Image 1 (spheres, rainbow, N blue to C red):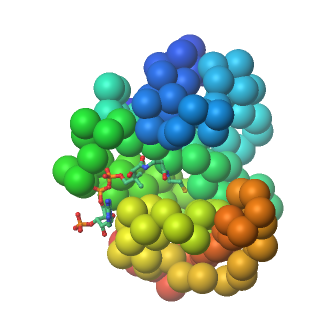
Image 2 (cartoon, helix red, strand yellow):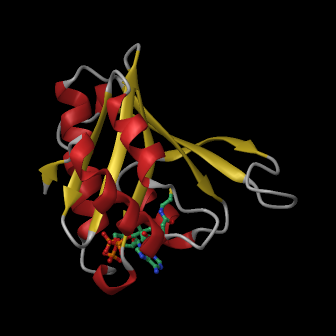
Image 3 (spheres, helix red, strand yellow):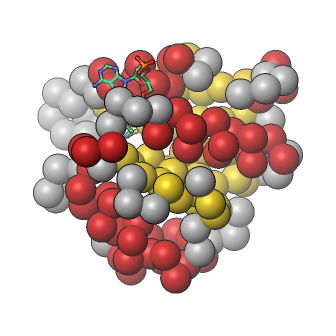
Length: 145
Ligand SMILES: CC(C)(COP(=O)(O)OP(=O)(O)OC[C@H]1O[C@@H](n2cnc3c(N)ncnc32)[C@H](O)[C@@H]1OP(=O)(O)O)[C@@H](O)C(=O)NCCC(=O)NCCS
């Protein structure tokens, strides 16, 4: 796992397109802009996956996490998420938040296994009848993610 730079935006876009359904994938330009935002960072496992996060006022947010279908169920997402949480703590984050589709059992299993728990439901966030769950992790109570 290594930090991703704006120059990696094309690789991140290819990974995102492989991981998400057509229409939900984020493009290279959008990803480069996100990497350029103050407080954002990304960690990359080339050819397998990446995580993109952002920190503002002590609160971190996982913006996206993608693992290619071929690389799944090998602990790639867990390794990326744990490295991301370590970096968030090093940057001074007190809590981490993210939104996940209620129906996304793979992602929910990952996040809940890393200690995230539900804070709120956002009805229709991903379209009619497709709710998002807002999950949070209190990093002040976490010694080692
Ligand atoms: C969700 C995603 C990132 C998981 O990546 P992964 O590398 O396969 O996950 P890991 O191998 O690290 O799995 C970690 C844990 O997540 C859970 N998990 C992962 N895939 C799962 C699945 N298909 N079904 C149920 N639980 C699953 C399990 O608890 C797993 O632990 P275990 O293997 O010890 O049982 C991947 O499936 C993906 O990219 N999906 C599409 C994009 C997406 O939904 N991103 C998250 C949006 S918030």
